[in-house]
Image 1 (cartoon, rainbow, N blue to C red):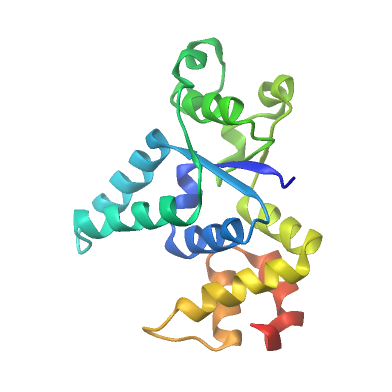
Image 2: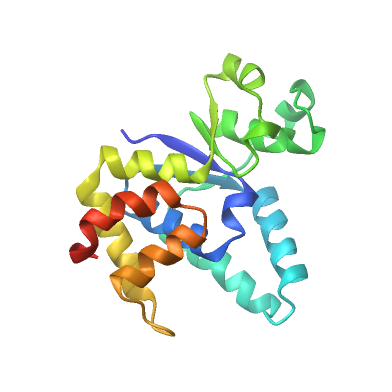
Length: 188
């Protein structure tokens, strides 16, 4: 069975990273988990930062995520929240949902907010998105490359060459992943 990873709002907010994670999850390279609270966080932030995007466009992204990655939304974790301790109490809902969903990894751009000693009792680690995605690519190169190829194929306006696509991943902070993908550029 593939690893279960809880995706924090910080990795669902950026479009490039969100798309990569969704395509890799849809390829069954990992079991993606998130909650309605996490959805609310990234959607509110996106609406605030991108007033050019309509609420319906943002809601459509969420609907597509949930349609293509089955059983990702974790619910019923709320009673765990008060029992948890993290540097920022507002992050406890993420850990609670990760525990309830059976995740072994929290993928977040804010690893410092999820200290190892706070996660250890639950056998969960926090991992930055590049390390997580790169690890999946190394463990499952064929399905990983196929997922990246599918992600690149969806880009139409503008379309990107494999080299341009890899550069976009690098700009999105997936530097180790981009470096590893250069070897597979012809397959993208």
